[in-house]
Image (tube, rainbow, N blue to C red; front, side):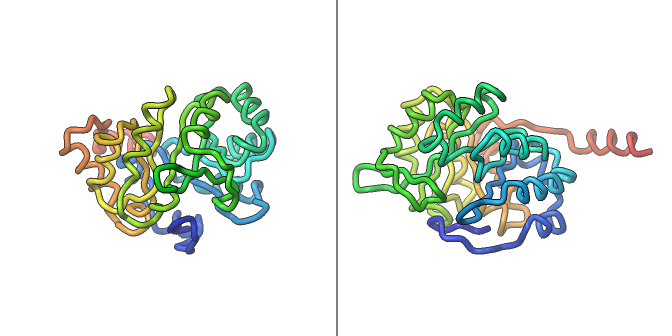
Length: 252
């Protein structure tokens, strides 16, 4: 799905991704793949898990998945399907005890808090349930709640900028990154390579994400990583030729 201000437009299903994306190549451009079930209403977690299990067969990077987790059984389904980490959003507000159980069972590093918000003049307002229900919390309140529950990371998305290509909400992201002690992932608004680097350099986060460059630019992720390295940002590097030699030896 393509999302703009959390309004959805289909760009293809997971089968389309498997047919048209070379995940072996993508693996050298990204550090992690985040897959979210944005199905409206009651989500089919079992069906989502089946799609994930097919996707991971050709995807050799860590995979973080979420959307619709309402029980430990749901979490086990996604992890058994190949997810490495879990994303929770609505349970942070409606089921905080479940979040604690997930952390107790799988560890804090396995649980990522997704916080979606809109800007309100000089303040912010956090939403849950795919952006359809307000919590009456500010981003600061939601971030502190997630940290107190014990999550390992916060995935922060500005709904106003989502899908616009105008860049991150740097001011808010930096404020939250300085408020909590857990790592923050910036999300929502990237349309250019430089905006990813801005998230690291100007917002002070340790990780940035984009869907736009993944969906609409064939070499977008590869070029984005090269641009960030040119900006002096410390990025992991791999010797692709060396890895191809290993794969060839294993297959022979």
